[in-house]
Length: 433
Image (tube, rainbow, N blue to C red):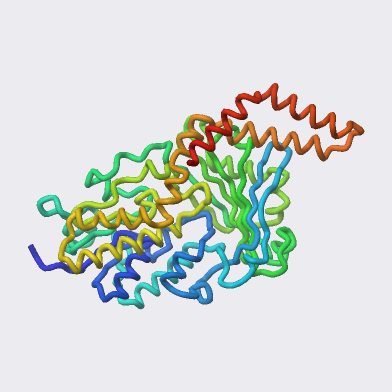
């Protein structure tokens, strides 16, 4: 067999692949990143919120030069019914102080900037190239076969950073066919508005301050769905993601869901007068801890969305991807010192992830996907009861508040049942332990 072309080949130039490439290149490792798009970010989509800390660990103060939109100073959760909205959230001046907590971003710009940093660190990024399959020798991964003429490339280790619909781990038997219960389909519009209009509508004082709104509740009819509105400098990112199994079961079209959401009386004033400039869709891994594939094989590791590393409860994904890319790169560097790229040596990647916030957080919520599948009413019945109760409290109709409270409690007893409430609270508590 011919000599290695690279020490490491990374498939996919998203946050996970680029982070791995950056760590390796900084250590003098000969690394190539293969990207199917015309440039990194050209095919990448996410809701649009990026948490700083994982990348700041790699590129200190990156936020001072990266193409970011607004730093987020207020995060809200809206519970919607057909005609009402109940809001909770936090606005804090502590989020308004550098180095900031998180930002709204456009992946096409951000990934392109990140890729330039990785390229400057001496990694080779090969665009417009598709990896067809892995090259194996006695069961060990030794390279990739691309769609280019004479496109076989050999290496010590391949890192799969292909995204949720990854086929390389599947070809090794590390994961099964994607389950429709474990993946959401997200659709998103970028709606252009003047920055002053956005500032006024979202209550911020200038065009660098941003707001996020996550949307759930009975409006989605027990569908495991989450809407969002994020502020960019001169536009809004408005979207919705729903578990594919629910979309199929209810015969719902995500495009129709988004159009309906934009017409809700709480959303319509925010997007009014705006012009849709972009429309995009993307699959999101939502199965959590139990949906993860095996993360390593002889000469092979899996990172980011390909490893199903998304915390859907806190809509964190890119930061988990970067962390996993960093840990996979460190695992390779350690294995290289020993000259051992067997799965036994690369299993240290799994251990590193277990010790990081990535798998500690996913373990915390490991039972929630199944709980919400079994008890879909948790995301509809209780928010609806809360909205109706708050309506009664705020509605002044000469009925004494003491009687309103009795009416609310009687309604809770009749519509849900005290025993059921206690049982559901215990169930949620037990599943978060």
